[in-house]
Image (tube, rainbow, N blue to C red; front, top):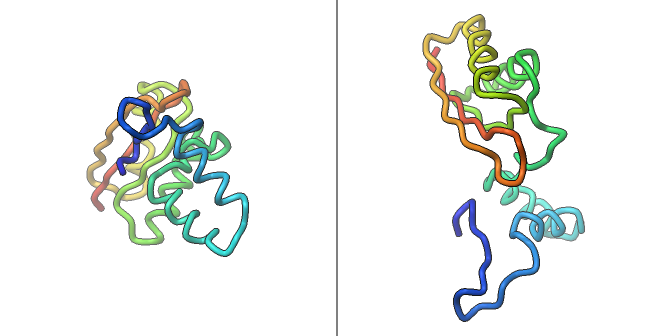
Length: 124
């Protein structure tokens, strides 16, 4: 199943009343014995990006998130950005202070929001 899977009634299967993301979140919140598995799947599908309280706003929040990823040995990060692409570019410039040699980024619109979905990769 793709990350952007949407149930439809175009085939022999009935249309789902809600997106898979919402159904999975309900299972996580239910807290039964499979909660850990549901949480792992929720994060693996990047559905946590839809949690608005985790959206990054500005260079300080971005720098903190990247530093956390760096401590874990990571070289990429996907996040929800609250702002414009030009603002993002300015915020990315601050990351060079962390010793990065090159930074690349990919931007797309977050479905159902005015925010951006951003993936950055870097080398040190």
